[in-house]
Image 1 (tube, rainbow, N blue to C red):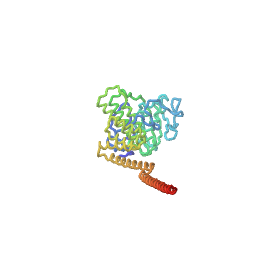
Image 2: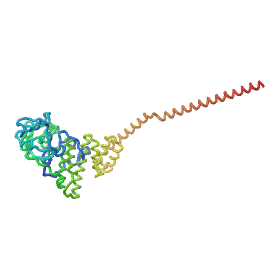
Image 3: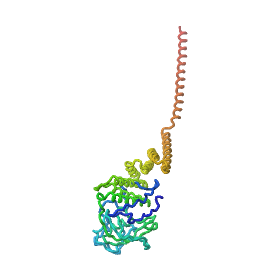
Image 4: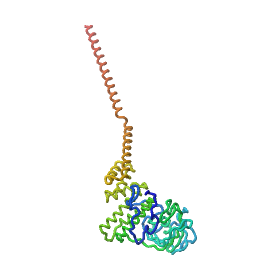
Length: 402
């Protein structure tokens, strides 16, 4: 399976979203993965900001000034351009209970949803779709527009593919690639999300697992920033303190979900070229699971991308020792060894160029010294001869005088 393959269940349905009742549905990717793909592991404590995506904190929804309405409800039969780009519009069909009844990010909401193509073809109808507002549990079109709806309000939403299922489309629900959608939405209920500290261990495990699965869907669709966001929410669940007793087995299961989130987040961060964040994610996994193959492999990749070939080779050799038959590790290691060799060769060539050729310099110096030595010897011999001749002449003169 490749990064961009569609996954059955990638649509936003009640099995994927979160509500007060949590289910323990198995991960979409638990069947295994290639190392370049995603299976069960990754995350960062500080997910990058997302375009038009919630951050998970329960803060009051910020509505653009032009979208705020001081009256009991927004005008009927009038389109609201939510983002100002014409790609996401909302029209009130039935007035709600006033602006004060609008839900806020972090709340669990329930809506009645009819999803149709732009030509009116009905795709699916969900009488009670539940999700956490602002957590990215559903398509962006819903996450953004429901924040602007009043309790009881019914609205029609026109969404460009960018804010729906994108260029890939979806298998469940069955949506063609790059399809614009018409959504008929009615806000039925909004309640505060349950206190994580009061959830039972099994509820926390199920909630974290569902957030992770949503991240896996985003990853396989190529929406890596949203994947990081979902893994971040899953981590918050696994790392929250608890006022409920937890058994060693449940604690181990919760830790396993956390390690999978961290590993998967590292994969998404690598796709986003967030190398330092990916490295932190891998280090966090290895702190608890030193022999985690995927974390070792991804740490090696990050170090290689940062030019730390020697350290990367060391990490990958360790991973290969743990799993000698893994062809992906073999290929990556061979590639790095070659790059490291080329790097050392280039460095040696650079040093030679900077320092010159020591051998030729030494030979030249020896020749110069030999020449200089001969020059000195010849001058000394000539001087000595001259002195000797001068001495003989002086002796002849003295003898003649006598």
